[in-house]
Each structure stands twice: as structure tokens, then as C-alpha cells.
Length: 160
Image (cartoon, rainbow, N blue to C red; front, side, top):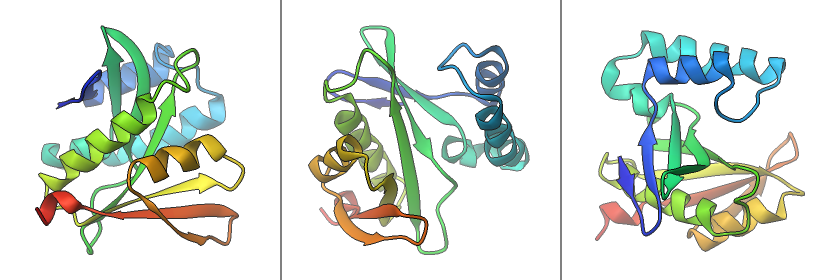
């Protein structure tokens, strides 16, 4: 669990994530997204040791009990002790600083897990997400072959 100034961010258990995917209790998923979450998240999470579940599941951020953001990792730390994050602010809560606050909270959490760097990829046209990453201390790294921009942050929590 992560606590920031306004947010309480907690990882969903495997069964909570299954329920969210199949009941659509969170944000509405397209069939394509649902299939991707099952293939890339639920199946690997079901096979992973429980200590690695936080790297597979969705984390949900609440402000005053109301769900405002989903955030998480694309996979467990790699051999270089790095992770990639993603985030989605729910409709009606955008442009309130929730993404920046959640990203900073997640980066701080990774420092307690000896993760050396955090990265994120953003569509080149997604100005809002670029601002979130820059405000969260990430730096632009490169434009990838798929047209996404890569951002990178060394985990200063490990070097204080």
C-alpha cells in the first residue's frame, strides 16, 4: 500500500483483478483490452510467486474513498533491476495532479524494493502524460520504432 498526500494506492489481489476484468466494475474494457489483460496480466500473475503479484496487478488510487486512478507495472523487474509503469486517470478526475502524485508514489515504492530505474512509454501526441512524467522527475530518452516516446528515471530513493 502507498499513501501520498491525497491518495491511498493499493494493489488488487489476483481475485479482485479477475473480478474487475470480468465484471467491468472498473473502467469499461473493450474485448480487445480484456483479452490482453487476461493474456499479459492474469495468466502470468497466476503462475508467479505471490511476492511478485504487485508487479502484475493493477494498483488503484483512491481520494476520499473514490477511485480516481489505475496504475501499475508492465512486468516484474528485469535483470537490470528496472520496471516500466503505466497509469490511467479515470474520467472526471483528469487535470487534478492525481497521475503525477501516483507516479511519484509508485517510484518511491520501487526504491524500497531495490529497483534502480523506472521507465514509461507515451504516445508522441499525449502531451498530458508527457507533462506527468516530466513533473515526476523522468527525462526523455528516445522515440521508439513504434512511434512511442520513452522516458526514464533513476531511482533516487536508493541513492539518498
